[in-house]
Amino acid sequence: MAESAKAVAALALHRFGMGPREGSIAAIASDPRGALLAELDKPGVGQVAAPGLAGSAMAFRKVADANAERQAKRIVAAKVQKEAAMAAEGNQQPDNDMASRAAAEAVPDPGRQIYLNEARVRIDAALAAESGFAERLVWFWSNHFCVSADKIQSMSGAYEREAIRPNILGRFTDLLQAVESHPCMLFYLDQAASMGPNSIAGINRTRGLNENLAREILELHTLGVRTVYTQDDIISFAKVLTGWTFLPAGDNPEHGGEFSFNRRLHEPGPQTVVGKVYEDIGVEQGRTVLRDLAVHEATAKHIATKLVRHFVADEPSPAVVDKLAATFRDTGGDLREVTKALVSAPEAWIFASRKLKRPSEWVISMVRAAGTTADPARFTAGQATLGEPLWRPPSPRGYADDEATWIDGVGQRLDIANIFAERIAGSIDPRLIIETVLASTITPETQQAVARAETRQQALALLFMSAEFQRR
Image 1 (tube, rainbow, N blue to C red):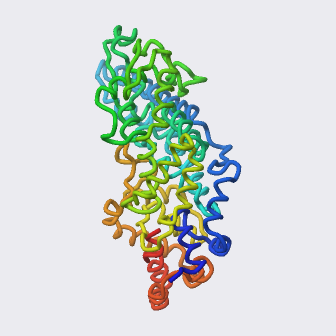
Image 2 (image 1 turned 180 degrees about the horizontal axis):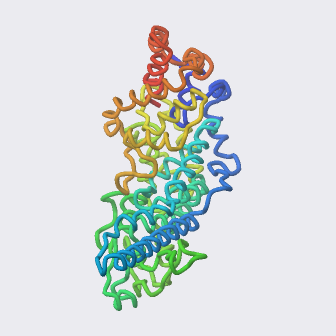
Image 3 (image 1 turned 180 degrees about the vertical axis):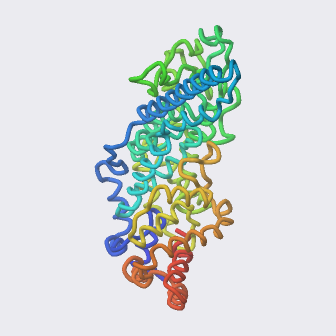
């Protein structure tokens, strides 16, 4: 039995977008696939206007400057306290900890506010999007090329704006180059500490090679775990990447936090990576390796598998993966064409295959359905409670895209649903959400449960915890 046009539209908004909002099902019901494909061709899709936000380098400098000022005030306070105690007590050594801490705390830390400002831009973009397909792509690629605000809070949001958003529908090689050379990624994976053992700096300072960035590029960002590379390839590629660093804020008040290639850190000579010899041409040695990795057959298969797993099914259909991988290879990694191939695949529209939404997707779909806004501090706290804190993945693998990872957190979702329902119950009628937002596409069982609820808060919580909201 064919599904109704409204049901297909709702599926499109849940599976590929950020969930329905008022009028969105009706807007695309005549051609849901066409609406998604049309969004991909809009100029500037995926990018956001953020004129009040600092770029990553400036944000990095702001935090570094605050830290330096805090340290200076701590030292001065301790010195003053010591001198006062010595004058009063005759060389008695005072306890300076309290005075030092007070002086340091008087200097505000801009990092937290920078993080929340970036979170607001991301949340607002997801709530305002027509379907949210482009935003979902931003979230997918940001998770694929993840960094952690636990390690570098100042740059995490700007990194997504600068490296991810402009490239979600361009060539994969451009996305790869932008990500791997971004100072946030270099900081996150300790690349700035890597020195070629035979480089000038390596010889003089007797510091060694750091393999983190090279390993994650091969294992997670391009070829995939246990594919065509070896440990020797990781070591060689790590040598290729030596010299990729960023300018320190303390020595560069105008350009600290910006990418820099430091030849003194770079391992001299040719290197062999995945069977190909790359001559030493400075920074271009690394860029050339990245260009080749970006179009490798194993990369095509890895990216296709992750896309299908994220959008369609925990166990990706081999046929759909092969279709996307072939499109990736044939177009040289054109992500717009690969994404269109995903939307065009009949298997991507099977109703029986409904994935469990990740916590962030579920929360955004609730707020969109209610037609309200989200405070970034409250939103990020809720995401942490649900096990998916914003820009804070547990490892460079990012957050998992399978039900087994998230199903145990459904109890926490009920708590969040109740809290949200309590906050909006005075102004939001669940029956209107069913009629105007969901266009009555939810099951009779859910409608009946909502109708029988004792309070509006309970009705809203039941609606938000229904399979229609939990799955996509």
